Amino acid sequence: MEHATPGYAGRKDDYLKRMRRIEGQVRGIERMIDNDTYCIDILTQVSAVTKALQAVALGLVDEHMGHCVLDAARAGGPEAEAKLKEASAAIARLVKS
Image (tube, rainbow, N blue to C red):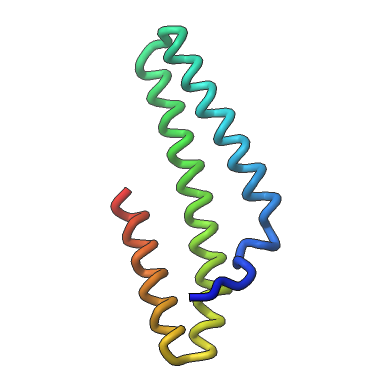
């Protein structure tokens, strides 16, 4: 299946900034563990990182639905069905995580 410009292309810099911020948070958690920080404080930071990653994932799903899936649905045919199945599987993975 051919891949065109990703739906998030217009917000790529925003996503990269968010991911760098998350990376910094993860490094902070690593330092907390290395410094024997209280478990609950570490868990609070893990929860914050998890929520930040979920926000990125939901944004990407929204971009994908509004660009890739919508374009395929407009075109119709097997491409549309494939994109819908792909999006459904991606959402199922997110819900299970």
